[in-house]
Structure formats: C-alpha cells, structure tokens
Length: 165
Image: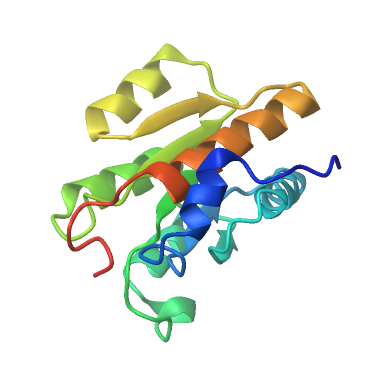
C-alpha cells in the first residue's frame, strides 16, 4: 500500500476532541473486502476504533447492544459502512430498522456495495440512507473512495446533538 500523508480533513480532525472515540462500524460479509477497507482506513490515521461485522444481525446487535455486544460502551458509531448483500439480515433490512427507530435514525449510514441496481438505490434513499457508493472495481479507485468516505464521515461531518447517546 502507498504511504499517505494526512489529508487536510484528518489533520483538522486530530485537533478536535469530540468524535475521536466514536467507532466506525463496518458491515461486509466478504473478508477480503473487509480487509481492504480496514487497511485503507488505517492508512488515513483516523484515531477512531473500527468494528467489523459480517452480517446484518451483528450490525443490529452492535447498535442495540445485544448478544456479543451487550457489554460494549454506550454510544452510537460515528457512521456505519454497510454492504447490501449480507447473510441473515440484508443491508436494506438493517437500514430500514435503523432509520425507523427514533433512537438510531440519526446514525449516518453509508452504503458501500457492488450493486448498481436502480431498485437498490431507490430503496436505500427512500429508507433514509445518507450516501450510496458503488464499489469501484479498480484497486486505486476503491482506496480513494474509502478514503473519501472515511475522511468525510469520521473527520468533517458534524454529528447531530445527542449522537453519542
């Protein structure tokens, strides 16, 4: 991987104290895709912890502090990077559940998927997704897309009041 200097967004972010400990929740059932996203976000030097899960049930367990995540510290993630095609509960159902609940609706959800299907895109926006990104096939473009997502949602975006609840 190419060593990168901190972006302006990351440099700005490191000078802030509000969001440093908020977790980025990554949900993807493809281990190689997960590994690539994790490596790319690590290169950004964002101090946020990253929690990776492989299915929609685990996403909802994390959000609602159930089962394996019952003992995690309270608080919403900085954002959720969510794949659509996952086992157990798919990304659309996860999105529907999160955005329908008053307590979790403000959590930013970014779809990162290989689907270019218009029905998926429309459904996600109807359910309240914050962004929909189609995974680039080219390795360098994929890294840039993940870098831009991480820099914006973890560094520049100002969460709504009470987002740490």
